[in-house]
Length: 389
Ligand code: PMP
Image (cartoon, rainbow, N blue to C red; front, side, top):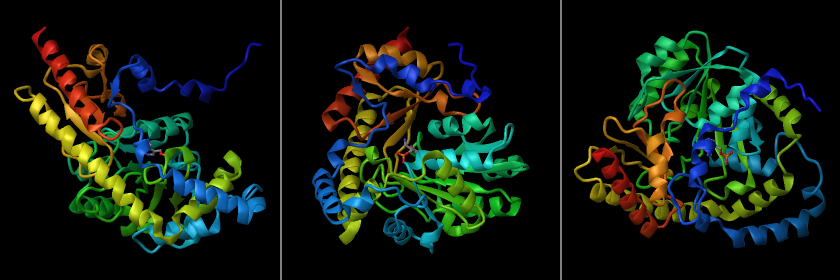
């Protein structure tokens, strides 16, 4: 059959990254590439207990169709968890926060709509927005977050700005309190809506990050959250918090996509979360990831000594961002690193415009401390070789 594809299907390219990372699918590779939470943190027994409990107590309801907004006790738990005044009626349970991005795109983007993003930004968001055919525009960013003057200069006619203030994917950076205040004020003054994505906010190491942008101007922000990094990504469970003015449209978009997020999963997570389970569980994830971050930074300092390699010190989350010396292209470096059994993610695909070829993202959470040491040594060796040639 000769299928005639919709024009939008042409926008659904395989992720550039997935193509690049194909070389990493080889046995023996230590991958610092993937964005996978550590499976050691998945609370399997708590899920087994909750699963039995839900089936035993509410089996029929748990296996029936359910409300598109989500399971009421879970919506309430989300509202209670957030550090600003949220009414449960503003919470929409989503099938991962990735679905939140899809819903936002469907409701807010027309072909050609200007959408502002950080430089660099989460590739999965660019992919989710893509089929709605936006015109993504990168706003200059530094270690403290987006640069306010550039945001103001580009705000006119933009549908929204997509921001990741906490432990950003891919850079691991965190927007400072001062920058949040300035961004929030500038966006409000320009009438620019904000889409705030915060899947990593709970994974802080020494101190909680500043309040979300949504807490400062709830009417101007759609906030996306996720259970992927604090419980398990395979649940595909996330949520969004939207102002009353836009909530019904997001809900209608969600109804059309999947009617509702699996109610069995929602009830199970709700059961897991009772008795403040996350209060004891999340600190164990923070402690593990902090140890791994420390190991990666120590290895980088040791192994990259004398090489002109810059890297940041993420205060939470899963990723560290590095910039290699002048002339190095990380897309070309990757296959050589893979020869030495280490994989990373080149940074360039994360940019809305032209990417910085010298950048790369390293995940410090999936590999063990020993593997991190081996991998960073191998990466330094690859780089030394590259610089000599
Ligand atoms: N936003 C960001 C910034 C992410 O890094 C991810 C996961 N890679 C997501 C959203 C999607 O997360 P999930 O759908 O698992 O909630």
